[in-house]
Length: 154
Image (cartoon, rainbow, N blue to C red):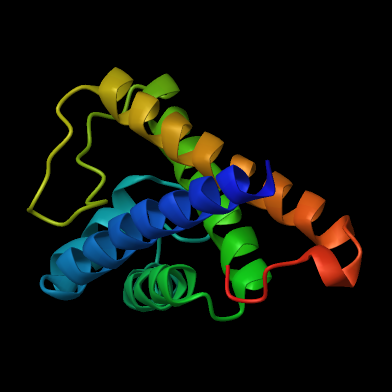
């Protein structure tokens, strides 16, 4: 039973890590465009300088670091918590934009992927959030087992 949880956790870590590395890299390749996109969400204080620039320049780097940590198994609990917080934050931001009637491109994946439909975008973010929740729950269960039962590499 623990082995299948380990395989599930590693699979989810690699998938989410790869998505975050890809998303962060696509944003880094066109940082100025992403910084501009941050303001389009009209979420205070990130809708005006200097906060839009701060978030626009820091978020892609953080996504790459968190994605790398997930895949490599470094600072795992922090990486898992960060991915969960990021996916929830992205979901809230996109839903808020949709419910306020804003017709914007989020810039989530730079110019590599464009969501023209809010419902698809929200669905993808819900799936990513659920994957992050599963990771956090599995890590909590794994962390509550006696020390001898834990697989140190996974």
